[in-house]
Amino acid sequence: MSSTHRAGWMFLAGVACTLGWLSGCAGPKQATQDTPRSASGFAPPRFEFRGVEFSPQQFSGMTVSFKFELIGEDARAARLVACTWKAEIAEREPLSGSLQPQGEVSQATRQMVVTEVVLPWPKTTPEILAFIQAGQLRYTFAETCNLEGPEGGLSVSAGDSGMIPLQKLPRLTVTGAYAQRFGKDETKFTFELAVLNENSFSVKLDKVVYRITLEGKPWVEGELPVEDRIPANHEASYDISTEVKSGTASKEILDLIKRQIIPYRLEGLMVMGDFEIPIAGDGTISFSR
Image 1 (spheres, rainbow, N blue to C red):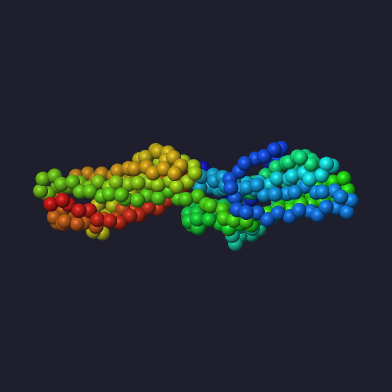
Image 2: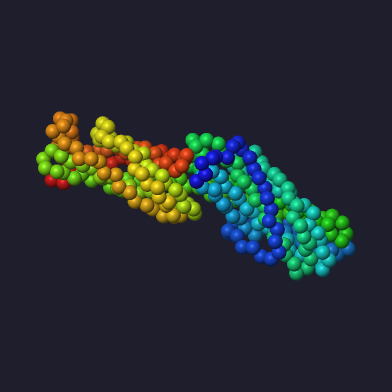
């Protein structure tokens, strides 16, 4: 992921206009508005929503692309002049912008208008963590394109509304905790970890910084170097094994080893570049008798 988060709340808008059909991610149903036929019979083009695409930039931002299509209805051409758009996202300040696509539409011709909106993004890691944990954001998007027809200016409008799915933070869970006994008073513990990446992009995990307590008392802490890229929608497995502890070194350790069930807590951080995700997990370890 990028090591530099976006500064401030900001937005950008761009446009890509091409002839022909473009296929995008399926989006919510749209509302379209057609301009009535003029008194002299000119039929303005139809303006219809064709889909929305969400493009996350790891955990540092997201671009939303709204795709619309102009469909010619009259043998005479209408020339595109400019398009304006407005987006309302959750409870944030409305975003707006304009673009100047080029081209003409007439009967049997189609032209795509794609508007890219970069979501306002928090600046700091704690803000990003809180922002992403919302899961999704409700949005309403409206666009109007002005054209120059054979009888003067005209405009067509369309819109879309729905939910923006935000990135999902990788989740670390302890899938197993085991004790291995050596002789009467020596033991070591092994913790099996799973990191689940539920995103449509891979994530680069650098290391897991951990601290383990047994019955509320510090037992071991350290770092698990990973240097691993976890593919999209994939789960990766890792192990943490403690060194052998001997009861001869401490009465506290000896008393702990004698217990049949030991409660533990693992906490720390998953480190991905400058991005750190807190982790925590509780459970018990059982000695086989």
